[in-house]
Length: 265
Image (cartoon, rainbow, N blue to C red):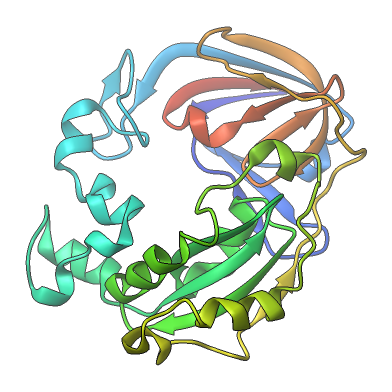
């Protein structure tokens, strides 16, 4: 069987183990059902920008063409740097109405164990999705805020203690930090200025996640379909936005966002 379409973020569903789906053109592939099967992937040499939906020979960043990366609200400063949010001040960055919908809603600040404990920010309504996308084994809410800007300020304060990046190799090898997240949450409060401590949540939700992986990885080699447009192998694991193959090679699906890829399975 085959399917062809624009690479979009994998859909992770909060179950045990995590169930993973991939939208490929008109098809929805349930990737857990493909574990143990030989998969062939072929990059067709063309992309679609997620903002303007036009075809390109290459994309610039974040699934966008160069024009959209610098002009679209889908790639605005507050996406990667929440402390840059301005919607609460009624100040437009690129599209005020869209920025208000995104920024002016409840957000959380969290600690996650995905190799090393990291700090992050996301909208309250999608916290499980965010944690699964990062391949976290455990995660805990440490603060609840009214908007993205407040959450961003807390994250900035905690970056001196925790990374805000996932160590993807440690995550895929399941080499976890192991520190108690409740203890770390209480310690993190002491790093916040008084004006931000009001958002701290001493009883924040904590979750564990279990991923469908047939074996632990020891040596990892990353596959990039852009530099080598064809790959074939036996799919043996799914974690975060990664496809894991039996030869120890892994593919970061999110990094291929927008690429037209043909699946044969």
